[in-house]
Image (cartoon, rainbow, N blue to C red; front, side, top):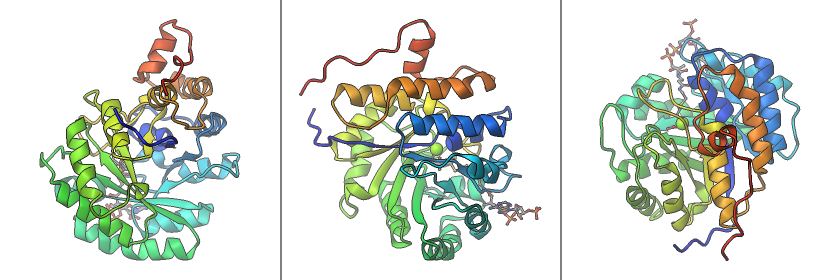
Length: 311
Ligand code: HMG
Ligand code: MG
């Protein structure tokens, strides 16, 4: 294994990607405590919610209140998802400094998720990105279904490249390449990244792996080998898109940090504090958190540091 990356940026998506898919309503105060604890664990980018239609995703309806009441750590970014100009205006009113726009590499998923074709989504996002940047906001882009679509099946890497490049053309500082339904496998990941990197530098790419089939960590290693240094992950392995049938949680942040610690790859994240953050939200869910490191802890194994890194 040859990995040149020595520092990884972890983008914590639990409070958004995680909680958007929960059946039970999580009290706003719990979300605020959870986000605060994630910041205390050392995460520097924490997705705080989504200004999407509350009819489409009711779980994110309290994002303005959540955002207003998080004690803002000046060293932490709290991005929110915006699907359109209405969402951006809500973000501006809330004083948000960083937004994410999201589209997909497959038409049917995009239609189900944001009721727009891919082209329509770009017409929609072009003025959103201009306005957001004029307001001094950072804009991140997401490409969903980059490794497979729940409705259309196979997705061509060339399509992922086209959509990613269009997001960067809109002024996104980074594109998060999403395995929305967790179908990707390591060699496929390297193939897709290889196509993307013919045009886009690794520094502008992040990977967003859902762990539906247990391949997220293997896919992360494959991406690290390609020089990718930003990974989205979800505390406790929470997650899933309500418009992707069968999609389950993101790669668990604890599992990612545990693996990276053992490789002497710096994340700035404290594993024990991360476990504490997950324990804030866990009692409010109607199922156990799926993250493996966390499960090992709750099954009575002590949280422990990884073995001495092999240099
Ligand atoms: P639509 O129904 O086509 O839009 O939805 P509309 O313009 O007809 O509006 C419908 C209603 O929503 C109207 O209200 C609007 O005012 C309201 P009504 O007149 O019926 O009372 N509305 C809004 N309200 C609040 N905030 C807004 C907003 N916009 C409209 N921003 C729309 C189109 C895009 C709004 C809808 O489809 C939507 O909100 N979709 C979001 C779905 C979503 O959040 N999915 C999960 C996030 S993406 C994801 O998880 C994938 C990711 O993790 C990466 C990966 O894993 O691949 C990022
Ligand atoms: Mg996701």
